[in-house]
Image (cartoon, rainbow, N blue to C red):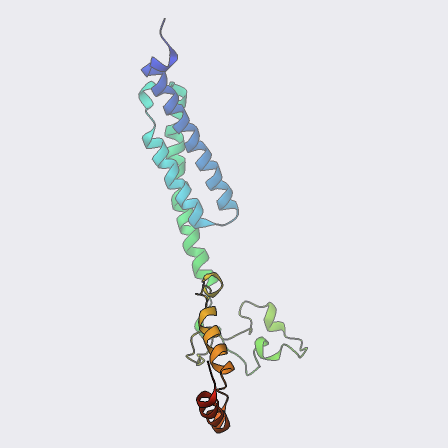
Length: 192
């Protein structure tokens, strides 16, 4: 009794069917992108459909599925060229002519945010909203440094150094000239 995993012909047939179904799925997703007028995505999916059709091993598939893939290949070729033409038309119609663009002497919307003015140009194809690209402004060159490691550094103990200062000040050495004189007189006459 042979196992299904060892049947090479069945395995190739199933792999071909999987690729055929992937090709159909890519085609229908591409059609939905065409309906949304996303031409670039549709073109990529049409190309992937053709790649799945070419990768499918048609020798082990049923004749009806092979015929369906051939029909799909012809259909995808025509749809691909149609989508490419539509993409070119859409790109030409979406870019307005430079001669039609004018500011009409009005202030930009960015400059008059505090004022209410009825402006019908805001709903047109070339609204007077902001200057693109924005004008260059100078920025001060002052880098910021954040010391993030300071909270995680263990500093050495300075207790031994502070004790020596306290002992020296307790011996009569004070601040200024009077401390010096007291220190000199106190040091000669003191008995240890």
